[in-house]
Length: 254
Image (cartoon, rainbow, N blue to C red; front, side, top):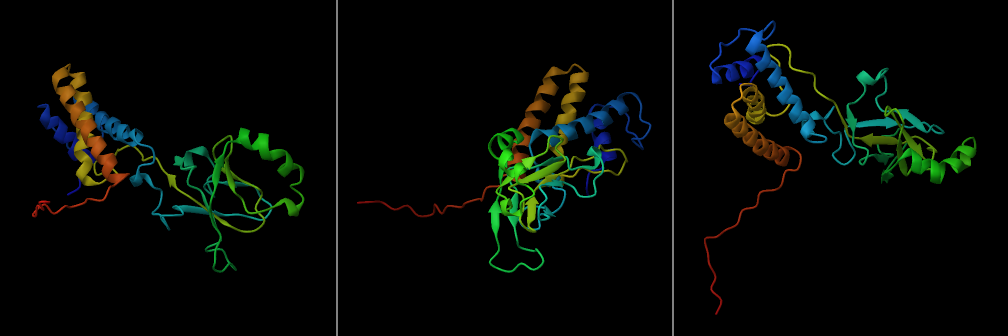
């Protein structure tokens, strides 16, 4: 059974010999502090690793391409990262700028063999220094359009640009991530797999024992958190195949 916000708060309260609560809403005193520690621990985990797999905004349509795509328009350089988003608050929390892929696969009217290219990330300053003058001076000339090879990040971070300007419709795939909202309702649960809840509880325990000036217990909790977080990162973001070796036989060389 999944651990809820309420159940995690009460588990920690029991550990420190404090009364449980029937609801997190309206909690006061130590109960309020413990509930805040749970959220603080949650976001410590969120911020500990770049691009957690469990923060994907959507399941990848293709593991090679990404989990989002935007279709280009001939002659248009800049595109909103999240079409339909009107404010920064509704944008993606982060994007992997090193994993943009251009393809004609899925584009209406295109057939196999498809164009599939990884796009190189270029800073705006590098683009301005090396390519902007020629591209912008002739941007009305369709002869200067072509298959983009570079992706640019706008100064506000809300758009991506392509260099050179697209000469037709392509799909631009990328991986995007969203920051979770804080736990609030009693039944709220965290986004990562249930088996890693002890990592969150260890981090929350660290803050609680720090507050209680119990240095020994806080250090134990911190050690448990660090070990669990490393295991979590290894398993969820960079899983390695498990190999088995057969040691039943020993060969003796003459």
